[in-house]
Image 1 (cartoon, rainbow, N blue to C red):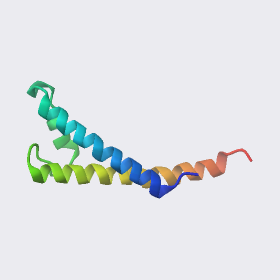
Image 2: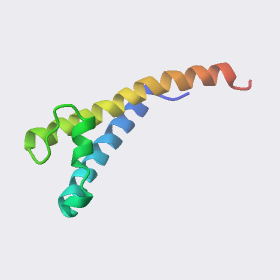
Image 3: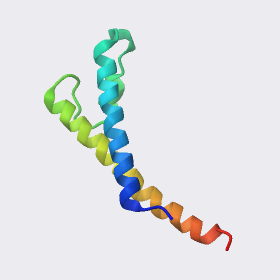
Image 4: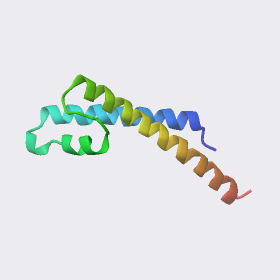
Length: 86
């Protein structure tokens, strides 16, 4: 059985770290390789290269990861109880 708190925190932190890596990647690569248009589409109210946009994007990515964990763990645990041998 998976622990919902552990998995949700892990996915939230993974999302936040991935967001920071994407922003750093966007700062060190040429404009033609940027993904900021994609980030602006998937993260509501996100603005590229503003402090507000960065903090909002970081919070949104963390919360999306937490949401994924909160949905995934109960589904996984239910299926494991139902289909596990024993």
